[in-house]
Image (tube, rainbow, N blue to C red; front, top):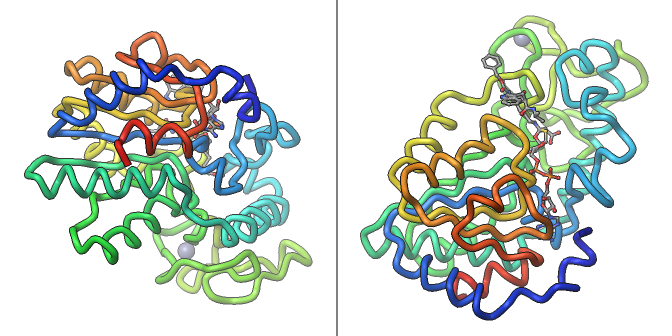
Length: 279
Ligand code: BJW
Ligand code: ZN
């Protein structure tokens, strides 16, 4: 099923009610998300119809080898995505998750949002909800880094601030004319690169550790809009299931997680998530 046909099968109100009841009584929660949660904001998913990788193979762009081979092409792709995502806003799913996770903490529980997304939309929704509701936001663990962050491909230098558009890298105009004009590390002269996690690279140990710890303690896990194919992140929901947590999945399609879910709802995140979170 493609995202556009997701509501061809309307999620049953019984499944929504069951999911809502499970999540309403949860005290220790982990929300695990992927690209589908941002689809309604206009951010393309990776796999499937309309996915970013229908025209590019991941190993051609999202690996350190691809960057070493053709850094100009890789920067071009990330600059386009930065420009696109800079125009996007959090949607109803991001907002409902932010409000619900903060409310779980406010009533004495614990909540963590572990996202594979690099678009920053959960963080923006959390900041907006915090400003509006005046209760502290739940932490957002950006497991695969940030589209707007920049670091060195050789040493551990990181740009002090994120960029805000596709035209700048580490605050300076991006010149894609040739390999020689690409941005260089101020410390070692190596090429600067996007601050995301590519295939074959380790995730931040503290971050993935915190996500697995939250999963091991969780009594409920809400998994939204992820194909649950990419490891080690994909193991977060299964770790929660092993620990006895109720798993509520919201996805346009079936995934490897569906069979392990307590309730799995086919539908669009921006429509279904606010319903199951009682927003
Ligand atoms: C909707 C919807 C709507 C649509 N509403 N739903 C164990 C087993 C097998 C392989 C491995 C393993 N462990 C490690 C590996 C290798 C590899 C891996 O997992 N490969 C598999 C693909 C087989 N993993 C890695 O390489 C990881 N690193 C690692 O393991 O390092 C080990 C190491 C240790 C010590 C030293 C050195 C190394 C790193 C993985 C990094 C992934 N990076 C990317 C790119 C990020 C940068 C960028 O954005 O360019 O992250 S890949 C890409 O996939 C991106 C995503 O975060 C990630 C997950 O995708 P996601 O979010 O699930 O999106 P989609 O498109 O796949 O799915 C969307 C879903 O939503 C679909 O189900 C739709 O139906 C649905 N949907 N619209 C609701 N409106
Ligand atoms: Zn460097």
